[in-house]
Amino acid sequence: MTEPTTEPSPTIADVLACRYGLAPDRMVQLPIGQGTTNYRATCAGHDVFVKNYPPGTDLAGEADAIGLSALAGCHGTPVAGLLRNHAGDLIDTSSRYAVSVWEWMPGAVVTTDLTAGQARAAGATLGRVHAVFATLPASIGPSSQAQSWLAVDLAGLAATVDRLADIAEARIAAGSADPFDAQAANTLAERRDAIGMIPGLMGDLPKLTTQVLHGDYSPVNLIFEGDQLSAVIDFRPPDPFFVAYEIGRVAFYPNTVATTTDWLATARTLIDAYVRANPTVADDDIRACARVALLQLLTSLYGIKQHYLKPGLFQDALDEFWLLRHRAVSVLLDHQDDTDALLHDIIADR
Image (cartoon, rainbow, N blue to C red; front, side, top):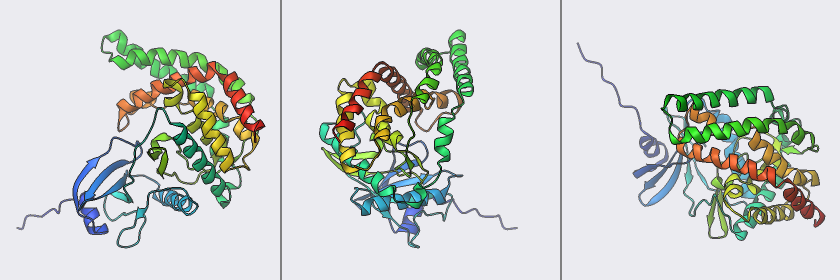
């Protein structure tokens, strides 16, 4: 009786070789990204970026996101070029490793203190992206994401905060706490108290514009060479949401707000550049962008929720990001008059 033989499962390196004609000499997993596993592959001296999508990913949506990147590139946004496989596919699904392969872009990510030149580049580029994407058919019509965001479940949010706090406090009481648990318990208690502010902040919002966005426009997805923006990466599938959200998210990025003293100046420079590049943006979207950024932070438990319920790929980074986001909430709450005045000045100067 012949023993059955089992062919070894192909590796990502095999996929690169067989489907792309690339022979990796070296592959290094990168400590970035939570939704995909990412690699830098060196192939005969030529580096590529490899994005591996986990099972269950909406690959049709990811293909649409690749299309958005290409569209932005056609209108002057620096983007990474996609390498298609031998069949011409955007995403290779020939093995259990669904991957897309991209040109490796030189430069570095700056997550804390953008220079004035970097802030101008980030703002102007986002303005051009929004101006182009506003014309897409998908930008027209209701936004289910916006409706869900506006109808935040305060009781559910409070219950989740309490659940996470109970876990942290139980570990502290049992003597099994790690250094993060004490910080978590304190920040969750403060977040619980702040939930009561949300209805008032929501009530002050004007009617906001929704359209297709980049979807994840933040410093972690901007690559700079000096003050020059060399690439915008990781466009998300087209899902209309608030213009004010994407402006506020990058202009008042938690790392910058929580760790620098000149965050207001950085925000002014970035938003000024955005308005010049997208002059048709509504005043209300500019006026509300800091408030929307604050509300997004207040209503999100990203980072700490993963720590206690389902750890992310790089949980230490998520823990740090939670602490920075929580600190940014405190700063933005304390400086609402300052951000309102800044945005009023920008609108008045248009």
